[in-house]
Image (cartoon, rainbow, N blue to C red; front, top):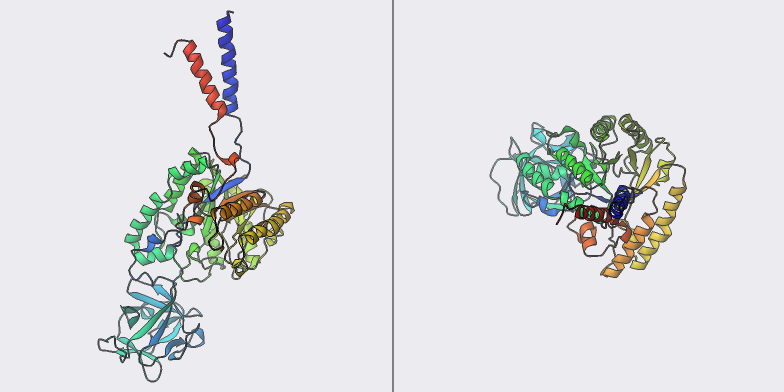
Length: 531
């Protein structure tokens, strides 16, 4: 064999070794380094407030709490006992009996729900307004005329409601009322809170056709393949994708929800496969709402999920998602329920649901991780470690925020960081050493209640969280990829260097691949195939 031939053979052998190394697991999946795709397939108005800008009477969405005051009597409308019986107009000040939750029927038609859950009703023959309807219908629906903070109300098939000198409400005012202080059919409306801006409020606020247009554009543009490329380059290996229960009914979910989220989720899996990113499907919104918040698509803040019918429907959703994605190579796990409320969801009921959900996932996959979120509120995650939910690939999800609790309100930057090391780290060490599920910090954020914090302080806070949360046996996921509030926005944090990921997590060109390509080019040159 000539020297040239021997040299070419040796180079070919070197190329084959280098190429093999490009296929070696140098970037093998170890723990989750993830980001949540919040505000995409489950709407949260605070993440992208502009989604709600075009809704008429946008301060009177489902769940808005209002109080009504007669301008002539200067007394508040009150559901006696919080609902279930009479309505009076005799209160000098307003509290819970005088506060009503709106159920929106259209931009000008509303139902009024009392503290105890009954609705104002005009069903009485004499037009007397009561608070005794358990289910709303036509006689519980009122047309609202509005002039800034003053309103007129009338049943959909009756006369205007007036406040009488007997301090009751009667729908028998047959004239067109004015807006002056002496008109018995005129009321002052006070918006006590308008805090729910979720899928229910958006879809019911716009109406079906307009909501379809708004959400189609949002789902198409808010998260794209470019975002997965950015995540991959940033060293992120997992996305946690919140979905709502209505995805199982796509493309025609029950009113007021809008179809299209299933196709978007399919796209996310395709993008994830293209960039070697894993997916966790997170059931963020269960039927009936598991926590009364906008991100669980609650209509008015009520928590109705803990019922046999709703739990059965939720298990059907888990079955649907498991069947559809179990064999998809991008699937890492399924989270059975996000943030159930400790105050409203009994532990025994939740554990029973988790056990059934675990078995459903196992019917389709022996390897997919089954993730259980801790109850939010006054609950210790150790309660799930003692529950014996399943035998393999079980994960408990904890959400760590130095926010939403008065204990964080006055902490300095240094004290916040100390809390991460002294409290979070200790809890993680305890749970990691427990003989049970893996530990996952499924939500955390590089934000706090420190006024005028510097960029360096944010970097130190982020570094402390990354250092501690990286010790969680399953890993962590940042909340969230995109957000109108910059410090909640992962992309903004990375690009503006307020959050510094370790250099080892950032994707760099594969040296072995570069070397192998160089070898191949050299061989082709020697063989006369290139100029």
